[in-house]
Length: 334
Image (cartoon, rainbow, N blue to C red; front, side, top):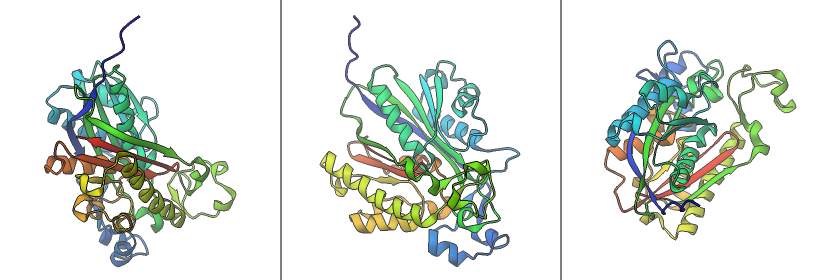
């Protein structure tokens, strides 16, 4: 009988991110939609979002570049990775997985690879899975990336969804650490599949619920019932943060950063006010990047990490919610 693996912790060794160079502003949307900068800002807090040029970039290239930058920041090489997990709902192909393409492109010849589909919750889902896999003793060094090119999924003839989304990727390299107290100390993975129809992308007419057959958004593009999703997000945002505080014994003052999915500025502001979170500890970049789905939390993490705003010895918290409907949280001792 082989010996059980020694307990270990998990260290974030490096982070990276990638966004397309092209920007789609509210002024640009005014030219193609019946909308205005004031209307968009009031409802979402978004001024601009990054949009891919499908002739040269997309989910794969964004994810690849984010992972490459995280590997470089970690000081390792791609061949040192045991596994790559990519969270996305906009992968160009389901076979091969986006993670396999990343491994092949970067030369991660010793790594397994698979994709996770949990929409906007994907990066936090993947981080939680990666932490557990390292703690199992079967993997030592992993790359996690969340990436979505949401511009490929939105119907720019209809304003309710198209004003929200942008494209981005964020990544982290995680490594086993001898201190078992390091890494994820509390996590939640949740889903309510009964409400999937509030945020979905049907490709065929028989996939559309009877109460949504007159939706003006074309097949093959993202559909969202905004009021229902807004109520779900506001409620779940507060619940998962309060749950994490309860189970860890932490207070908002103990946490260095609450790194939250950038869904809608009104949702984030509601959580800040209702829970009493310090504003300087809640990073907001939705005004410049929009909602980038699985890329959102990873992009925020990289921006904060490189700015030196996630100090060692102080916990941070990741929070996300999205299509599925799904939600996830993760408290990390960095």
